[in-house]
Image: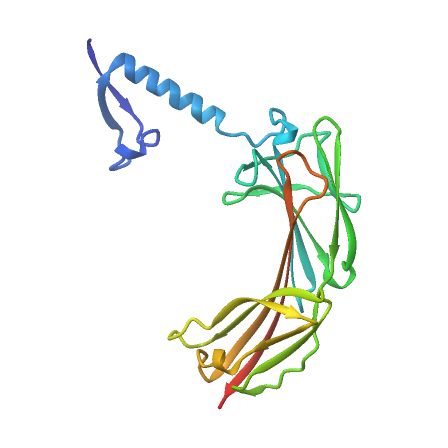
Length: 255
């Protein structure tokens, strides 16, 4: 078998890259030709970001709402993934579309997450039921109703707080609900508090023993409700609805 010398740009073969100069690759001509052809085919076929060739039942719906008390707006982010939760996000093609309460959302994208549909809405007026409608390229619709209920911290927290047990009362949670508690200080010597707690009848307690891990001085409290459920009207691949609401408070911890 004859041996040919091919000069290929390092961009195609990053494992050979040592400079911006051309890389020298020496191998059998038949094998190399097939290898190059395979790479070119892969490069041309790796972008499955269009809906045309996607089977509807393989589309996974990923719907999320993120909000923080005190902010003017919350964020609704919708993604459609080919092949399940770990699949590739793609762009809907007409007549495909996604709507929130009758408003068509426009596609955006990032290198990290791929294509997504995002919109911001005022928190104050968003409480209650809302409707997401996904229309596939064949005109079939999938409607999902979401219910946004922000919870409220009723307890008034003083600027200076002694390191006794802290009791917090909330409004807007279920009789038995779950809230993540995050307590951090300005010290790098401890990990603070970060745990998912069961809230019964709207009450949550951070014990004095837990506060032993927190240094005196400025402290930030965060109460995070992370709600997630499967979509109720999806494809065979399914999907999820996740709603995250955050409440933060600052205080100074003293003896």
